Image (cartoon, rainbow, N blue to C red; front, side, top):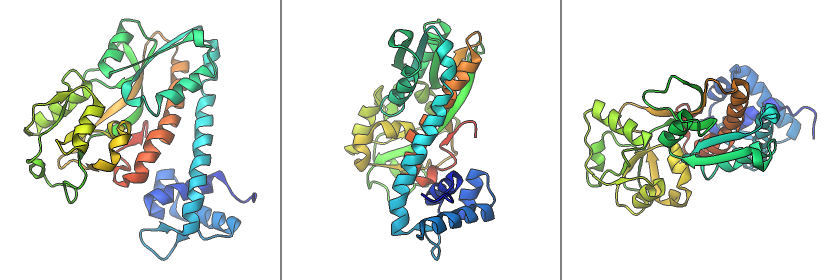
Length: 320
């Protein structure tokens, strides 16, 4: 492998494949456009292949670029997760760890975070629970957990310290093909009932508060506490919902029957954070938060942006 292939060049190529614009890719990576262009040129020279169709706008990958991108993404994912896991070294001083994780992370994030923690801690030292956000926050205040990964509540407990890790924007989820494109208003969905998340969930309360502020009253009284059930109904054509990319990612088996669209009103989002009591070890909490950010980037943000690039900038690792 040529010594002229740099990690930065691979990052530029990966970001360009998503952004479709050298200026946007450069800005996202904190580079100038000329510097990013030079990185791509160096990479193409080293490989002896053209990776981008430079005559088209937006920029698109050549056939060789599409094939190479698969390997670049896999390599960068391993490197990012490895770097994130290094931040867990301080855990070796912990006698035990009780952590609660939002159930939205069950399929993609929790297994990888658990594996990273288990590489440092013995099974006897690690206790993990998955639950809705409101139960996680309660477990923290009642000292049943040391750390909790949950959505930020409207009125955070001031006795808890917070490390934001992900901005998860709200979107429309509708049956595949029901709309020709992003709607101008909710009136476009008037023929379908609105499916609501069960009222005790923080996400349901945030959605209800936003609709109330905008004086919107979509019709539909069904409430469900199961994300899978909501997406199953949407996939069958029985309704629509306001949800988030995390909710969509969890319902992977329904992706072929569900469309995501931007909201036809003011954007809003939820913040997922790592919480801990102020008297717990802040350095170790920060290390776990860093590891979690690396996993979220590889397992949530990048896969979703690859299929729904219009979420770029709103779905993001925090802090920006």
